[in-house]
Length: 484
Image (cartoon, rainbow, N blue to C red; front, top):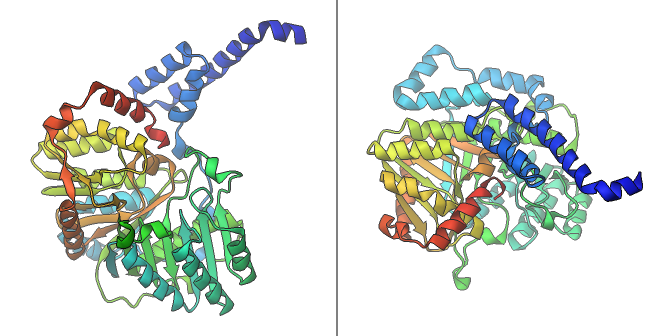
């Protein structure tokens, strides 16, 4: 038997390959996806033994259907059902919203039907333009906590700013304040000494999907890319700014990091609290009873309409991507987008091209210097259609732009953790605030226009003249878009 295997190992491997390939091909056919995609995958599986299986494993699987954790443990609890019931509008309230949101009501209905994301009306929000503005406010709110602190971050490092915040968590835990922290095990780096300090002081903390060698773990893993802070169920933060020194601007070191976060007081905090508990239920495996004290009644008198939407492999729909698509498709005047990673899907590119060809003012800000060469080259491959359609693309020169924002028609805007790329739309766990408010839109619009002063426009004629070598690099990098 061993001798037979030795002399026929190649035939055996090839047979196993085609058995697995046949199974994969049947799976692809049953998905009823785009015929061109289906045919492409089947051709690769047949004519490229072994390599075809690798390509299918990396690119062809439906990430959204691979449920990472079950949200029912949280969503079925009576307090959560009660809160969701309270958010349901009657006909008069819907009409009131309809009167000033116009076409954006489609967006409200989309998020509610696909992710049960309620539209909250009583909110006060503050746009935070960078880490130098966010961190002092967050620290002040953490120090003022009276009942609980909940943090959920992709990156937490115990560098200078991280240590300051983690020390505050320890002090608050010693005051019998409930402190819960969850961090992504690939993105974060907390020393054993700091972890021991957190434990000794009563801070509950858990990594999200821990890995053995985080530094060498590829981005194929499902990662929790969210950045959420909740204080006493009254104040919440969400946006692009992680807890790390890199997110602080330092003129003495010529370091500038342009980012955007939002501080929320009001009803929308309850939605973020629910999302936090679904993650906490998974990472801690604690099936505890959620109490009303985590969802206090709001005393907010401001009226900013706001939805919190999350997406990830645990959701049935690509909620954030679909919301962005709808916002673009229903735009009437302008669409201003800022994103550090622009590796979109066909739906978003088509929507932007149609908007630009229809005469809308479509502008996109991306970094001039990316923190990933592969992303930079892949992004360049997507600009052709946009520029040809009349959209304007700008590269940010002042530093690294990490803000993830979109403003449409002076009425709609979004700030969150989702990049405009494949990973954020399909693989990572993300959360965005969708804001329907003229004043907020004007602020974010002005931030966008201010950022244009630190940008250089991409000239379409120059873009077309780039070398064949660059075009090949861009096309090759584009193939890797699901992984970057």
